[in-house]
Length: 215
Image 1 (cartoon, one colour):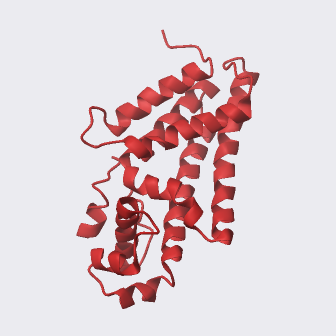
Image 2 (cartoon, rainbow, N blue to C red):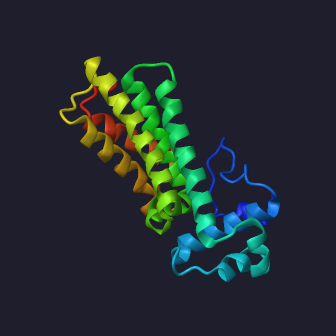
């Protein structure tokens, strides 16, 4: 693994692969990592292709060998991140257990990712408006799929008598927003680890939906 891969803002989620392992060749991956760091630090619009190439230790011309535009880089980052978010929620939904157990795991793992990958998550979740119309529509569809997973979990919990949720769509939005916002404030020097934040938020959400508490 390269130094650039290791420094994606010091992000780490124990037991998970690095978010950009699927990106090849190595030069393309280094540019993606550099773009994440630059977008998170300066914002998409204030970042230039020269900034990104410089962080990756390459010339600006080298960037265009792998990505046609800066927006293409952002789209690749956003697509990988949203695919991962959907995978996390789907895995929890499809796991064995009661709706209460599966909702807790969905929140716990979703929050853990947004805390452990907070720099990446900020770019993935909060630079949506910088995408082209076609790319933005693609990502919004992935977000709808994530929302649908949470809605199904809530519907199943209500049907099983485990949750008291008068407004399932609104509650699903509230849960996802609460989890995603962790990426804005999480600090690796803070008093809680990503695992601890995930457990804390899982408990908060279970109380939100009126689930019975562990005794």
